[in-house]
Length: 305
Image (cartoon, rainbow, N blue to C red; front, top):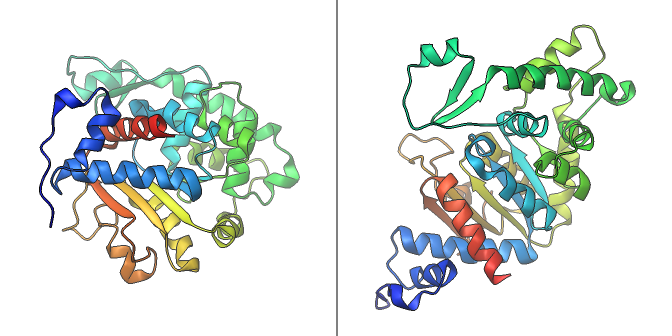
């Protein structure tokens, strides 16, 4: 038992100092954020670090943060849904994501050639450019490779063909960081690959990713994960770490709740029962919007490192 330390804003010169004060506060949200920053710092320093991306993290403005973490050597492997790959390519190929203050009818947005992700808008024309360029990139890839290609090989080949320095796919290719996406066919990129495969050689072998991922897990002295959201990326990382008795450390930022039994809402403690998370204090589930909390937490960690 310890006495709660009251937060004193006059003693906080910057955000990092404020978050340090959070650690002395109660075990509510503030304390979880402070613990998450501490664990994230450890993961970046001396763990093989996996970043799990569920939800529209790129479209929501986290793209450059993810890219910078990869460039700076803090991330060793990325597991993402297909959407974040698509939206990274949209930006890399000259497109963008938009927002506006007014709320408009979705039927009207559709007529104007706009798609909506919450309060983020995309232009249909940007997807048309994406479709054209993806077809060109697939044609440009070696046919032998296309005949038995892992997702990590696909994302590397895409990253190799990009010039945008803010692209996380390019940064991952440049740094040799594998980008996995076990559900990639559930995306606009998956649709384009299927269309390409009607008249061209293309066989995506998701099992071919498993030796790459398992080798990373087996070679690691310690493994850590940062989960933005949950879903398939979270389970893919945790499932692989089952091979070594579980993750050594993890931070999860999610808005989902555990009552429905979904993995996205499950607290990290649940993973202990499956051997996917070690029984350690180096784990915390932070309840909140990752698009708000992750930038603040990364800022605080980078201030320390």
